[in-house]
Length: 133
Figure 1 (cartoon, rainbow, N blue to C red):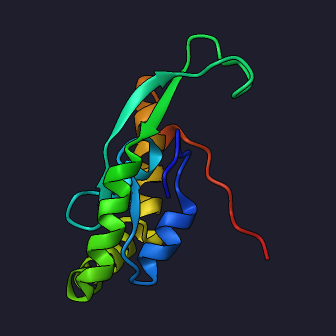
Figure 2 (figure 1 turned 180 degrees about the vertical axis):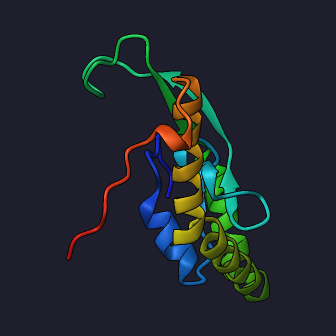
């Protein structure tokens, strides 16, 4: 998945969760769960977004992935099935842990607590609502 700017990288995460080796641009939102140990990261150069390439392009930049490096990764993973299998398994383990529902819930709770602290609220001051069936 060579991309200019990946918001989250759902397709990448889904493939990783299935144990597939993933090749992706080493920049943007996918870097929250991809690293050199669990995927094949491709280098890039940040370039200006030109008029007509994207809405509100002024002052924006995005990644131009190194296509030759991506091709080398494709060839290597095809030639070395053991490497591809090992990378896929590391990817599966990593993404299932990193993107687990428990981890997501903990991150949300942590962020809400940070916001409350910034506003000078304590958990005792927060309104509690009962869950109704």
